[in-house]
Image (tube, rainbow, N blue to C red):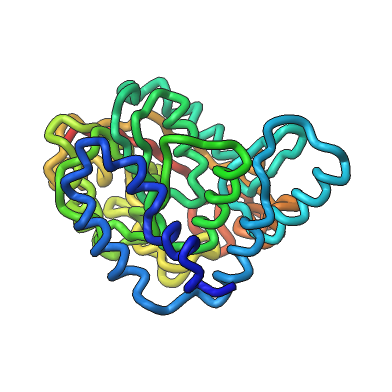
Length: 318
């Protein structure tokens, strides 16, 4: 099987999203999304598309408890979609213990944001779509995630197939690919803005797809020592071994960015230091993790001698 398999080509090009959106206020703008997907995907497949497609094709819906043999087989299939960054996911007796305890972040923000009931929600940089299921659980009418990383798309498809997840979809897009139409009631951007050379441009992309009274939920790495880093931290090379970290802002700098980008009433709702309880190596993500990113002699700083990771959650009105 190759990427030319019509069933998989349709999935990658938004079949799930278009089926959800055709009877909503997004219906008049689906042609623009088709064009955006075609531009992003082009004609070239990912080198592992056929392998990942084969994995998902072998996964069957799991309505109840499974035998030990079936569970072992499912675990082996899902592990071939390694690494699992966001989670955890629970499928009957099987727990996908991802690198991040993403549920902890959700608990920190869910009671501080506007109700998602009946809303059309966008999650930019959604990864494997873990938060999309949370948004649907909170009553969102439609939850769309965008992320260009192909592996995350297949992880989402595997979980959706196992759980029967309805109301959510992922498109293989970046923020700049989004048609500039005000369609979304709530927009999430979590763990994205510090990877952007131009944070104002990222915020502009978000604002142009939000209804006038929509809510933005922005989560980012921050530095808390504003005296030492009045203009934020601009790493010389890497931060906590991460490439493409252009600026780790302060709280006041982030609030300023939001105001300058045209958002109203920006405020910070949570500041939390990242700990090993929330980010760690597991059997589902065997690469380096937080322990490897911190100075072994001083956990208050990274391996590069920068302040250890702290994350802030901000909300603002469009």
